[in-house]
Amino acid sequence: MDELKNIIRDIPDFPKKGIIFKDITTLLADAASYQRMVDLLSHRYIGKKIDKVVGVEARGFIIGAALAYKLGAGIVLVRKPGKLPSETFKKSYELEYGTDTLEIHTDAIEKGERVLIADDLLATGGTMAAVVDMVSSMGAELVECCFMAELEFLNGKNKLPADKVFSLLKF
Image (cartoon, rainbow, N blue to C red; front, side):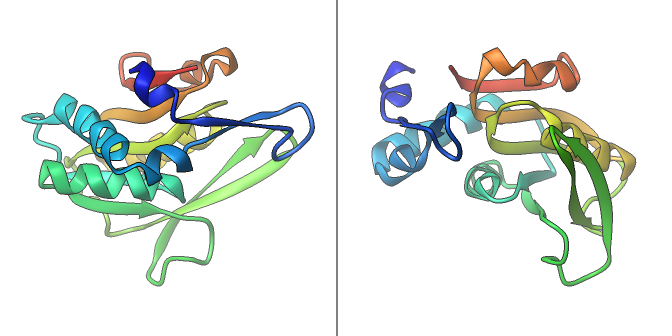
């Protein structure tokens, strides 16, 4: 895993002073590394009968779509408000300073479907906790929340179901 971790670059003071941003675009741009990451993540879920992969805006789309393809599953998008054209289910959640809202099409997931939620990075866990609530309220069976990387020091995992979190890379 070190070869993948080492490709992700640190950007100091982005998006604000004191933050060290983990820039995954370097991994995504390297064909062999991107393929290896997708292969490693998808291997975990082969044979788990995943019906849908939920990709969280925006980088979760990149990982979610690749996983859905490899697993023979559908891809479902969770987006910011006003980006989906049909009827949506909305979920607002707390941020450090204020709130945010996510949406999913009301007909995107059927009751009982086995769902994998994918995103690029687990940080504080607030966004993913909101997505887990949305998917659960739609009657889906949550298989797992999977991440390309996790910032362990932020303890985002604590906001999610304990046995339903997998991160390929940990920082």
